[in-house]
Image (cartoon, rainbow, N blue to C red):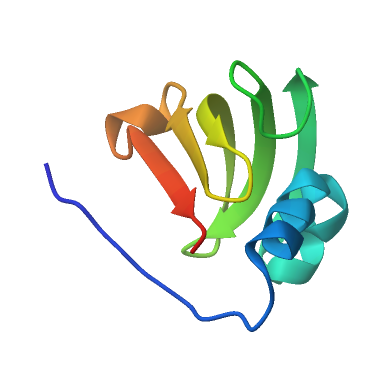
Length: 98
């Protein structure tokens, strides 16, 4: 399996970054112009067992994806699994906040 890692420095506190993720539906479009739709299908934002549905353009084509929250450490880390069919090419991911 290939692991990809990217990082960015944001000059704010981990608490503020995590707060941004808790309002993900509201912030989704501002994050990237290729984002189309975002909504929670199950649970509360970024809790274990929650399911997030998103649509976004990848390589010029719209894609629909579902993410299952698998582990959350408030103000530190969010881990998730992508659900079928996108899980075939990208099974899981995470956001780490330092």
